[in-house]
Image (cartoon, rainbow, N blue to C red):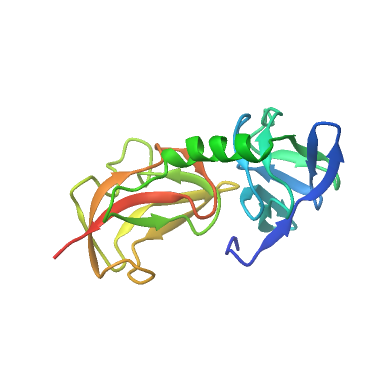
Length: 199
């Protein structure tokens, strides 16, 4: 399944009395929905839409920022029609939006001098190759080019995530912590691993 960052669809938007309604840009199965209360901003990934055997990251459109005021679908993979509402967004003014964003960002902050390996696309992040199996990596492990670090699941398809040097990541790095919990949903660009350079 192709879920590379280039496969993106911008969510449709309608203005409402207290904010915005974000709607599906196509017919398909919607997954990796964000939780109620999450603050979203333009350009952020807000789930995955699978259409005709292809998966697309759903992107929050320009001009839309606020707090999600609707519940996630009960189904992990929810069938949606074109134009179906996926999120109701409560508008936040500038000060409230800044404060909410700071709270959300705190969990993704790095200590000074630490590095981040980030998700290349949205999905569910798994620490281990199978239930009951040992985790791919543990804090203190040294990662090198090609080291497997986890799995990202999108629509029951699993993609192995490997450590790759470059983009500020050194040839060797020591794992400080795995940021998402085992099985947590992550958005594109979210921090997966907190690292430090290793000699």
